[in-house]
Length: 278
Image 1 (cartoon, rainbow, N blue to C red):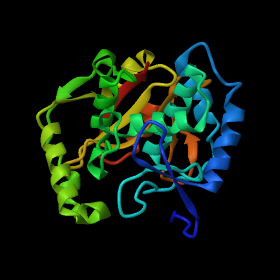
Image 2 (cartoon, rainbow, N blue to C red; image 1 turned 45 degrees about the vertical axis):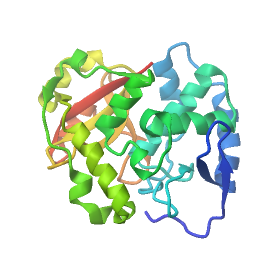
Image 3 (cartoon, helix red, strand yellow; image 1 turned 30 degrees about the vertical axis):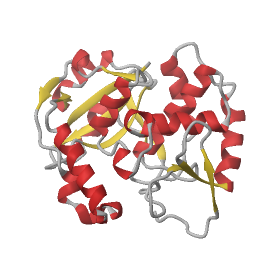
């Protein structure tokens, strides 16, 4: 689905940052509506809060590349359409706000920046956590979540991560040589760290260790790439873990099939990573 052009963006400065924010009037109004909706959804268990927040986006259109706007990196807030990663980021940000009882726009923007960027600071295109295994590791470092893949039966693997630098033409911001070199440096750093995955054929046996609200990242055999998709674990009435996610098939939805069976239909899937928001 293509982005709808002609939207008039307003640019604001974040309260606690010199970075810039891009958000339409329509999205600012959507935020105000969402906050009113969410105030009644806080649950005693944080995982259940995440599920409650995530379900409020059901039916929202899947839209790719919503962050690739303008000539330089800015914090983009878009509630009209999301891809799998921006969906998880927005749900986590709103859930954190509910937990902290800090339901205002500035707090949301600062929380989203903290989640989306290395060490919580927007500092150009390369500061965005483009590879989701790095997204998990850096947000664990911030204390926002815990990588529990090992605890669910995961194993360590090594894999060369270089998809962005070897597919430079797919990323408009990489036309800039400085951005390109910084991304290569990030990839080199990732290549010195093992990735832990729960293999596809081991998920069902360990499914009881996955809880509502856990973040699920789908690992892949695609050369140079760590993760192809992400979503949120939800235990449905059948007692099985399903995936609450922004599906590339068109919208935010809950997978009809349990996670194990869903993954078997995805070409080149090797398993999952599991991260638990704290």
